[in-house]
Length: 355
Image 1 (cartoon, helix red, strand yellow):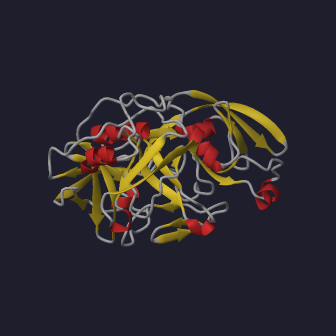
Image 2 (tube, one colour):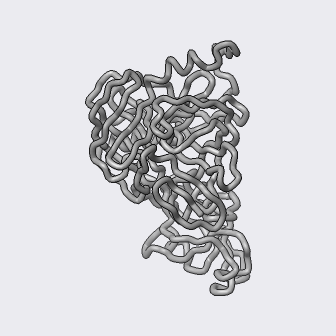
Image 3 (cartoon, helix red, strand yellow):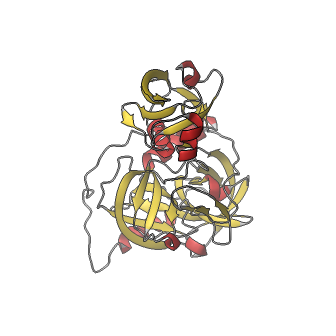
């Protein structure tokens, strides 16, 4: 089952837990909205060198210097019913997860120096599970965000407030890139194209920082797979490039725009195969098409199974969401699909929608 702190959902494949509150935060079917001012767009992710320049590791102190420097940039976000973590994005703006703020319009920000500040939620995005909070406290220290992807094997340091323990630090490595959490698509579109880490994270780390060895923010912690299903240190973070892109849009417009096909989908199961006469065992089954949507214009209809998008294979709904996330509105992309027993091809013009 898909486990979230404070709420449980069924899933066909595995278990994932959103890192929400120390004291029991509500599920993430709640999100506000709003906006003000813009910065420049983030550059797209690329692969970076494993060790940032001028970073040295001293085994006698570990990452103490990095932690001492970055801790003031990581905060605790409190609201009625729970708490999570956040990272300073602008001198008076904090980025966190949308499921941390829930429906709240105001929250309390606890700072590393022991002070607290009132915060106003100024924008949320359900598709990526990100939210921005403007604080009454100004001149907060802004960390460097690393927009290129780290490499598997690089050092990873997580800072947040797990179970209410403010500015807790754990360390590990980057375990993988472009990870999708199986079985999560029925409940959320955000658990795709994530960074995987084995730096231990727990409920309350949501919205906290995942750092590289140089103290640059490589991701915002989002979810983990809990030990009760046999997992050992399987955590996930939203890449910094995604965070900055969405944050820029929220600051400029109060909402973020995402690629859109206009379909509802389901995993392919034996029962589905029998019902729709589907011959393939893998892919994303189209169960509904929005009238006038890009998918409708491309000729897709309920019962079709999408097995390829933009030249990339699609074996699950999560695959489809992950590939779609990497396309651009207005782009023409090839869609491979199975209708009955026939493999077919069509071209879709990717649409746009707000989160």
